Image 1 (cartoon, rainbow, N blue to C red):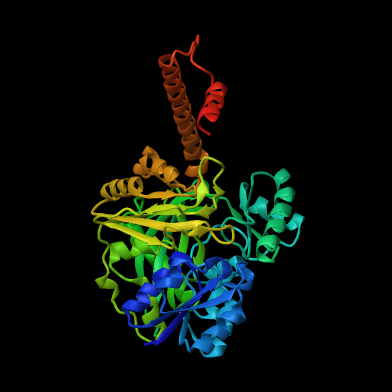
Image 2 (image 1 turned 180 degrees about the vertical axis):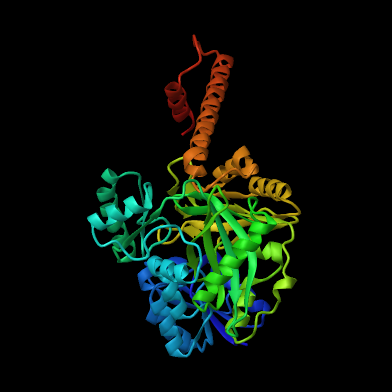
Length: 497
């Protein structure tokens, strides 16, 4: 077993790994940038070291600096968390050559799955179903248009090196192809330093189903069932749950077999996730493989009882998987909400500032994975996710009600959050009945949310005006009708600012 692990990350995932290390008797080492001097993860680690300026490229993304520090402090292994360098094959190879153990897959496996086109080609060779389309990048307009004709419009253009919806464009006819292709290439080059684009058939209104897998260095593979992540905005997951509401026992066996086959095709080790699209006819198609721990791993932990981070560490230290497939059962339902510092009422723009009040929910079946507390500074330097709220229930209805209750208890002041939007989704009939797909948020729920907010704002304005009119009357002010919004605001500024 490792004696000391360096966590090459920040925020809630760094804290999550630190806690696992402490429970296993392993010395935890955290790193921090200038912006994170007082962050929570720096206080919980056994050792903590300054890694560089706030800009990620000079701190959390500085490969050599992180490896040099790990060697200097005598770390046996590096845990990358998710994001940053977690799926960077060059970094993983550097760690491997340094003699330090990387807690995750090999650099070879990550390279095989890192390119979307290469991964699609590999899956096709191993009989893993893929969405109809190309397995190599498109070289020019004419080739792309001809391929699109063969696939059949509409098609989806995607960045070969991409993720998170960047470099992704829908093309519904030939006239749209060239501008969409150019736009996708520019966005891909900017985000991933690669302008390689491929095309695949657009699956209309699919479900996003993913399977958690884990493998050791002795050729043992296990799955920990599926998660549904169809509630998305701009291709980013918002709410995740396990098990999937739309999966039957027969389909569950099918997707698990697909995922294990995909993992074996690249000789995968450690924890990973195989992501699939499910169409309206219950066909499944390989989307991509996330060669790391997922943000939403807690929902799997709550329904299986398996600590995935501890399992990662055990496997990386040379042990076999600690459980047999037959021993893993799904118990109840778990649903996760991602809490972001963003203004739901203003285009979901990131919100920055100091958290001046912070109260987490509690009670049976409630879990919080958080990287902040009162006085935490939220800056523009990193992802705006503050925490993850995960609730377990004996059935899906109970899990939803518990999550609704917990969100009502969750209070954060000083920055705007998306909590009100999460509450709205969880109360919507579409979500409760499981009728949503990956397009539902942007095609329906967002408009409903903004209409609801407008009604609330109008009602609040009416109430304020009514209260002010009553106040003025009681104070012998002569008014012929209720004051306008401008008059109200002017009066309040004059009298109370």
